[in-house]
Image (cartoon, rainbow, N blue to C red; front, side, top):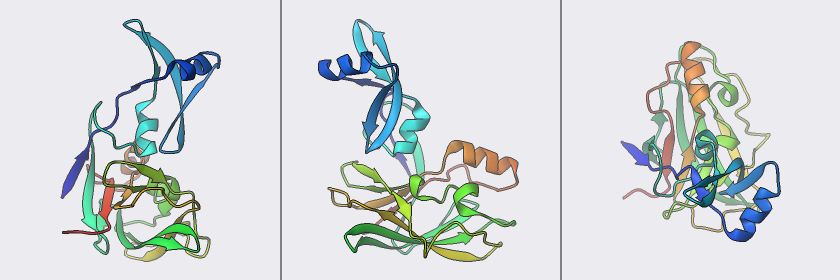
Length: 208
């Protein structure tokens, strides 16, 4: 199943105090889901806004309503393999471990050439997000060195990768999101990696 998410508008209204600070700086930074995004202060219809790049908004994992073109994701459940033409990801587990929030993935190479998951397919912590039912999201911080995706795997082979969030989310996690960069997908196709038209994934922790 493919599910659509509406991305937020490119213009974010600031409070008067925040605008004063933003205007005093050469580069304005807005934090969305803990991700810093540099923007530009603009005036539209007499009101001042901060204009944010769409690619950075997508990378932040923002899932609020409104705005521009929707992002599509392949949708599945915990324990269900999802395939985007290049990588087959299976969410094995998600939850607290030693005071941190940790997810474990089985990462399989579904292409016909060797694959280094973090660079070739963005299977990396900064493209993984925990999400709540009401659209809150938080990016993962690092990977577990003992179970890292930073290994080359041959066609048909797989590895286990753990991604770690040092400070657990303040919300109840219902989904884990994988959001590869558009440039990675497009570049991969040029290099012979057959990414599907929809390459992002969403894993529900509980399915009805």
